[in-house]
Length: 312
Image 1 (cartoon, helix red, strand yellow):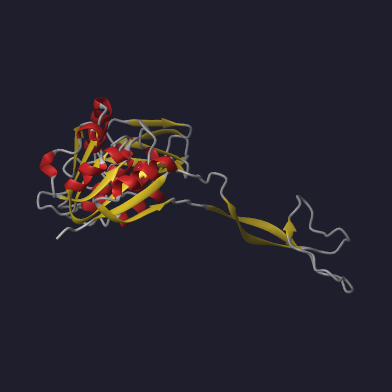
Image 2 (tube, rainbow, N blue to C red; image 1 turned 90 degrees about the horizontal axis):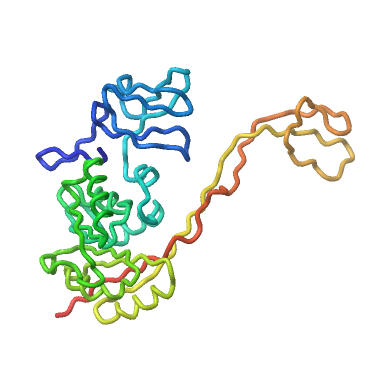
């Protein structure tokens, strides 16, 4: 479970794997899988067969071997890892946008958060951790099957006590009246968010914060027009994350002959060669090199934030 909570409403992080736990099986940075541990279970992958019975009792983070001698790591499930392994029923928000949303919505333990557009539950999982152990997330999706699948995921990840999933067309009906003036934050991921903004304003506490996620700038423009009457401090952001690869490589360093005017730059070592082009001895040394990752994501969407005006 991502956030197991005991009856006293305290977070209790288990450090050892037991039967029925959810673990993230890590093969490499881009190959992970969520697996529920069972006493007689076996995981089959390209590295061989891994018996679940050998996982039970080990601490999270353990390296375990297959019948072929290959290995994987067993990681504790976190919202960050769950975002990388969950089933994509819709386009999801990733870690860069999620962390920005949680911070700018000013979400802390005990907050009540309303979300429209549950989708695959990627953001919802992080919202639940942010409000735990005494807060709650109420998330709505108009698609009944999607909502049911999300509900099952929250049961699987141990978040059902922190998240309530509802089926409702927020664009057409607005949020339920029972939440009027109760929400600390509202998040909208809708095709026409401007239709839901009047209802969101009624749900927020004074000085509460709203965020709308939109992939197109035209949606942002219409949303900002709708926000002007009830909200202030309206700001839009685009979060672009650039990752770098860090590798160690062997480079040759050849000495400069007397009279040479330009120093030779270090170069990659050639197989079976330890001499420069002029026969001089070259030394090899490990060097750390970096370059931008080819897997970097570009535009995901625009995040528009606004704060509810306080009318005296």
